Amino acid sequence: MPQEPLQIADVTGPSGERILRLTGPILISNFFEFQSLVRSSTSSSLILDMTAVPYIDSAGIGAVVGAYVTHQKGGRSLALVGVNDRVRNTMQITQVEQFFRFYDTVAAAQGAARSA
Image (cartoon, rainbow, N blue to C red; front, side):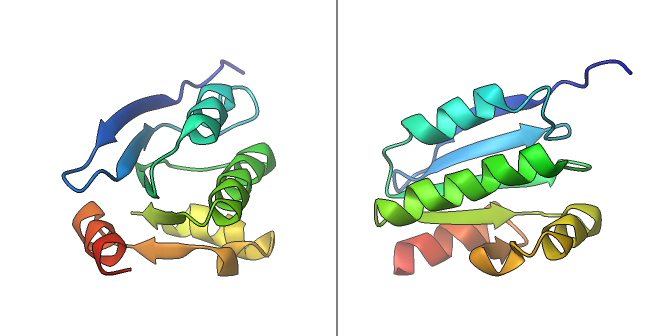
């Protein structure tokens, strides 16, 4: 099984929010850069654009939950954008879906972050 890459675009939004645009599956073989970027984030709001994430494994779920925990402890917000049904179902099965705020677009997540 070939290793599938996870590409990450790290962008700062107009209000200072950090946006990580993820492209590819989030798997045990490729989530380390993602985890490092999340842990180093100091912005008050982190938006994970998962529009181009086709699926996620249990280690990927752990990395996303870790992002949530890191931001909650620091009193910062985390939003997930464009989560497809397959990824959402994985979050439901692993019983972590309730921890997250989901948005259809980055703009909607940015609006929620500004009004928080």
